[in-house]
Amino acid sequence: MLVLGLWISSPYPDSGPGGALRIAAALWLLAHGVELVRTDTLSGAPLPVGVTPLLLLALPVWLLYRAARDATDASAEPDAPPPVPAHTAWTGVVLGYLGVGAAAALYCSGGELRPVWGWVTACLPLVAASAAGAGVWSAHGRPREPVLGLLLTLPGPVRRLLFGSDARARVGTAVRAAGAGTAVLFGGGSLLLGVSLVLHGAAARASFLQLTEGWTGRFAVLLLGIALIPNAAVWSASYALGPGFALGAGHLVHPLASDPAPLLPPFPLLAAVPDAGAGTTLNWTAGLVPVAAGVTVAWFVARGAAGRVAQEAQEEPRAPWSAGRTLGVLVLAALLCAAVLALLAALSGGPLGVSALARFGPLWWQSGGAAALWLTVVGMPVTLTARAWRLRGRRARGAVPAQGTEPGSKRPAEAGKGAAVKGAAVEAAKVATGEVAGEAAKGATKEATKPMAKEAAKDSPKAAAKDQAKEAQAKAAKAAKTPTRREEPPAKPTANPPTALTAPDEDERYEVLPAPDPFPSAWHDDVARATRWAALRAASTPLDSPDSSIIDEPAAPRWPPLREPSPPPADHSPVPEPSPLTDALHQPTEPSRTDPPGSEAP
Picture: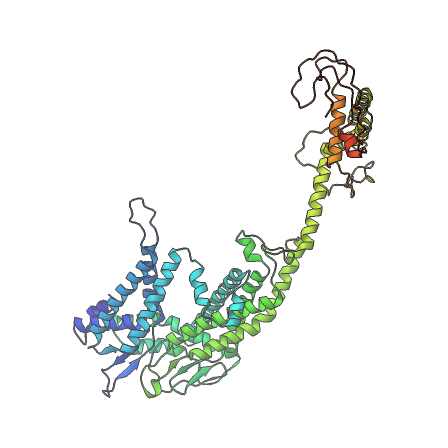
């Protein structure tokens, strides 16, 4: 639409609407990085045109991203169609865009600006696939699996740096730091461009008025200059980094010296090039731009190394990174920033002809290498200093977790200490609520009942067993009613229960909690169980009660009066010697009135 508007408003157009549409299609392909060939020259020889206006490149990339994201993302309206699957949306957007691009390349192949088919097959699919893939990935919540799949192609040392227990935090910190560093470099280059345009304002104005006299032509030059401002900002950033840029073959411009080509075409942006000759102090001040970028990257890395990002994201706090791991993240961020700047440098430059016009703009590998070197050298001391300062501030506030306390770590010693503190708090709470006194009373009851039960089991007469069992019950009841030294009436629950860290009272300062017996008695063995059962039977069966019954046994019917026990048999069979177990289990007792004739206690 812009080209057609300029063609309509031009008082002396050089071609018809077909030529204007072919120029529009050629400029659309040039915005994707496709190199063109200009055939209408004074010498008749075709000349290449490879400088891509970066502002024009941003428009198709953004539209591709939006198309893929909107096709995949679910709509909030109830009557909207269901979302398209990811692979279907990506394939549809890429194939549709490549079809339009192929038609545009075929249409403009017969005009004055013709595309080079090798660049068409390389640049157009790459731009379409990457932009559409970013849109689909964003619509699905930016999952980690595709990114980790791409990282598997990296060398082993780089993979060991990226993967680990906190790989997500490290990669995220490096990406944020690289983005901030790239923004500072680009912004610093734009600032240098603006300052240089102000200092060379007269030359820029003269070149702008010299190109054309009509307002439509000046408007076209203004639009072309606006489209090339991002290119000039990247060139200025490369100038600040040191390698500079080329204005023709063999003519370099950098802070130490400026050697522009003598026959440059008049253009406002080219008028901002520093004057020819050695660099001055004013030119050297451009080095503040990479210094600012290195400090910015270091600040972001130190912020992530101190665990600040995890706290702001409301995740579980993690332990701070070590100095070596922090420097590794800094190097990764510097490499990412250098890769982005190298890509921008490669797109922003290119040939504008042959011979002296064969090279314009910075070399991508020089700009990328200089950016990585600046960010690493400047960022190392700043990162370590900022990390130490942040950790010192967090330690003063008590917000730094110990090493190994992050999720997934195992520290036996620390875990044991935590369990001990927790157990002490539980014991203190039991003391405050009177549970310890109850447990002491239960223990006293058991200890008082145990010897009495044994004595009752040793005595054969049932009356003696009954008396001793009653005495044991009386002592147990007395022990249960008698409060211990630390027994207190149960208090009402308060909002803040006492813990093990609260200070004890004056009279309880030297008291200690009862420790468990290291040699517990065999309370649950067979002999003790049989003894307790015999004592309970003896205590629960009174002699003068006609309705007495054995515990846990069905009531026996009433029987007539007992007869005298019959004498032992006349045979002289050997009698087995009694043992403690047989004494406890088969102690002969007098049959009660409710027992059947000849029965004995089990």
